[in-house]
Length: 297
Image (cartoon, rainbow, N blue to C red; front, side, top):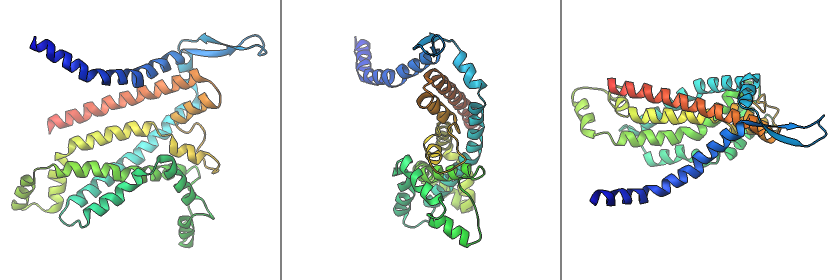
């Protein structure tokens, strides 16, 4: 009787979550999978209407066979190799600095570093487009007066430009996560290390960082997933700036272009599913890798 009552209570409490999860996650994913199996074709010589026909895996083959789609993953690879180490190391360094006894005005710096994250991504991208534009930007003018010439919209400058915007948005946010994890460390452990003669650098690298390994792994996982969804920043740079960023620069932009510019919703759905599978695979790899490292530690 008691067990049945507990089961009913759990069902009542978990029911709203599963309903929302089904409506917000499972149903859209299922619809996208279904949509990816169909394509629209014109009847006759193109003078008739369009009809939706079952195409099986043709949309997946078309996406994988499209060079623009494959090159989008190459761009993401370069972005991840450039962005993720800078983000993790920068956020961790700032958190360690704020957690040290040398830091002053911690609350002010926490707020100042976190504030860019409160700016919506599209607004942040527009701000930086202004700062990247010659004849408008004080940053570009200062660089040119110092003899530094750099085109933020060129093929060589597009990727660093977007990485800079992403760092500006997310560095402070992840710093707060690391700082909260550092604050949860038992201070007696740090005091014992100090008594044993360990310096500030040794304590930071050999004690603090290993103790917040779970937080670092979590941030790395979420950053990888977020990087695969790169869309807003390159989309803004693509619109009217003369940037080297094309309309299919990332897989997300490829799917957006296929759906809303070419009206090929089957191809867009297939590209989205392939991107989701890539994210799931990388999440599994990162989780297994960090899990093994944690067991060894």
